Image 1: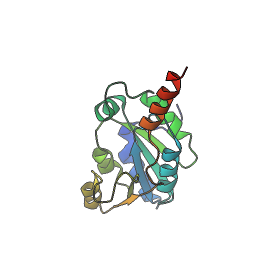
Image 2: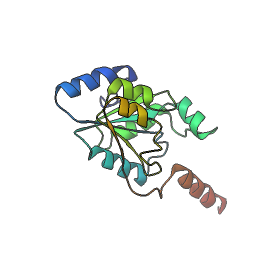
Image 3: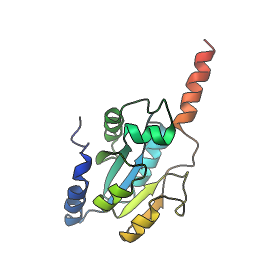
Image 4: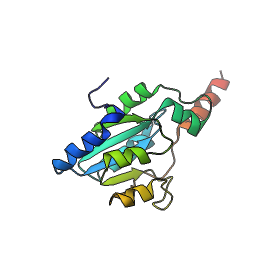
Length: 161
C-alpha cells in the first residue's frame, strides 16, 4: 500500500503536524467504489481549497450500510489505493463511521469539501466544522456522474450480449 494511505488512528497527529507547518488542510470523503470523472473533478476542486488534501474513504461496512447489499464492489484497501494515486491527493485514510464527523474532530481541517449533490446547509458534518472554526465548501462539477449510473450502463450493455 502507498505511504499516502495512512491508518485512521494517525489523523490527529497528521492534522497537528500540518497545522504546525502552516499548511491549510482540506478534507474530502466518499465511497469511491468505482472511481469516475465526477470523483476526479470533486477531488481536484477540493485540492484547490488549500495546501494539503486528505481524503476519507468509507470502509467496506459503512459502504454496505450507505449503499446496500452488493456494495462495495472493491475492497476499501483497493479504493484507498486508487484515490491515493490521483495527483491532487496528499493523504488517504479509511474510516468506519457513516459520517466523517469523528475524522473531522481528530484531523481538524480548515475546510471540508463535499460534492454538488449537497448544499452547504445539507452537509451532515456542517455543525462539526463550525464548532472547529472551519468552513464547508461545495466543489466539483454538477452531479451528472454516479457509480450507480456506471453500474446500470454496464448491466444494460451486458444484457445485449
